[in-house]
Length: 104
Image 1 (cartoon, rainbow, N blue to C red):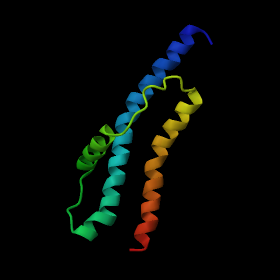
Image 2 (image 1 turned 90 degrees about the horizontal axis):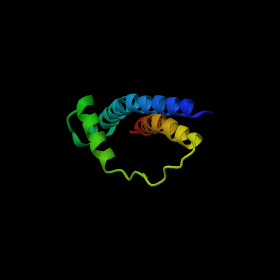
Image 3 (image 1 turned 135 degrees about the vertical axis):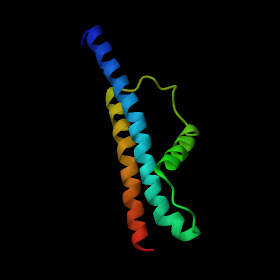
């Protein structure tokens, strides 16, 4: 692959990441509102969360996550796996929460 192709792929990857960040935040906020409604509202008689508040909470928590910026030599396969995991983890958590709430 020549240098121009690598630069184009890198630019497209950057654009995709910039698009995915707000979409992932919205997805995580939605999952939090659902889980909050299943577990926190009935248990503690807390108010429902709006998606905007839930997105804000997930962004606050994400701010304190440990990010490994030292390892810049990740392969494209590793980056793809991380991207897929970032999208799938909220659905897995929601599915597990759904199973647990069936026993409540």
